[in-house]
Image (cartoon, rainbow, N blue to C red; front, side):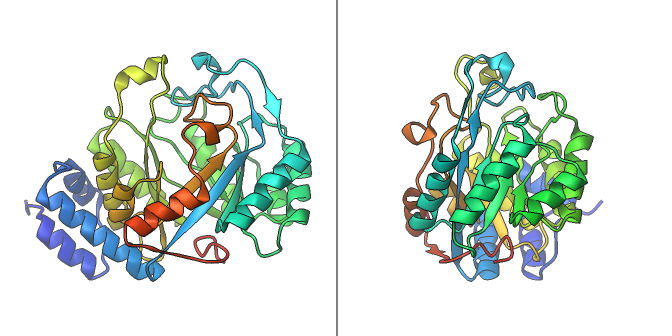
Length: 334
């Protein structure tokens, strides 16, 4: 059996080779604060800067609603079983437009419109049309909604969405009431409709094994996304899953870096969330700003809690040696 070696893997990476699952497991098994892990992070940073010409992106998301969700993802503050939110609220169309226009003004490279899983699709279409008509034609508009049929995916494309964010989460179907196969099917529907799909290895907790994480990296690579990356699970206070704990930002940065090495060079983007300089140093070239409801926050308006602004995200990138892209997102084809 040939022994895996970090130096050899980095040399292969510089030749443009994608890492195998076995090699990814090895890289994930390294102590996060080891010299070898720092070498991997440096290589991921080099790849990301080479592919994006050193220009990172900041995307910005707002939520159309806040409601207890029957999807019951145990890591989400919206989950009915977590009991964080008992009342439902929805944005008016003019409020949604105001958020989108503010993100444009702040210089976000893409505007994301998010809902809980059971938000009425027809209402999403109605408000989305209003948003699209009021923002600049060149602004990249992205949907972050529940699983959809091919017909619904086509309607999203037809009214002006460029892409979607959709992820098969770690332990989907065990830590959620959602079907892993339905998540995969929705990704296929979005892509068949001509929508660009961004995704992520998330939400990573200390209980997830190196093999689980490697398998998810391989899955995200297989769909040829607009970007992949990694995000750690943020503990929601006083919920059962909070007892599992959280991984450190350093461990998250390691996973971000390994993900970059496991994804094809045809994929320019490598994300992390929540925004941090360690992630940017490890090859993340995409952060998100957020307002309104946030599945990692117990505040109804995350701008008063965990949500960062566009300018805050830009500052973190600057502190980490990145320039910022101006204009529409290149990850979504801009």
